[in-house]
Image (cartoon, helix red, strand yellow):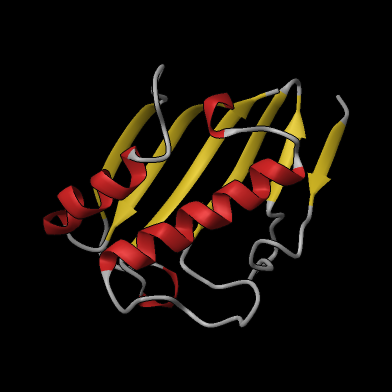
Length: 126
């Protein structure tokens, strides 16, 4: 099996021993993205809407680096600090897709990295 590591400065650098994304067997597996602005290294947490937009922007940067689009995504996992954020996150998240939506789960967890409110990971097909 050949695997290709995706690394782009347009998305946040990993904060641990993992890759931003990996391509293997015709699939892109992207690590969970939080709302770090890659240009400044700062978290965007002023509103849940802006936090979600930054997460989706980071996902777009990974897709761009792999020459893919949101329509290539087949599965997402959304992790929230509280399910009360679901509607606001879902509204922003949904605006990035037009049809043939990916499979998804959304769960609330006790704590996310750097105490953010939302983290999203994706799997896409080439």
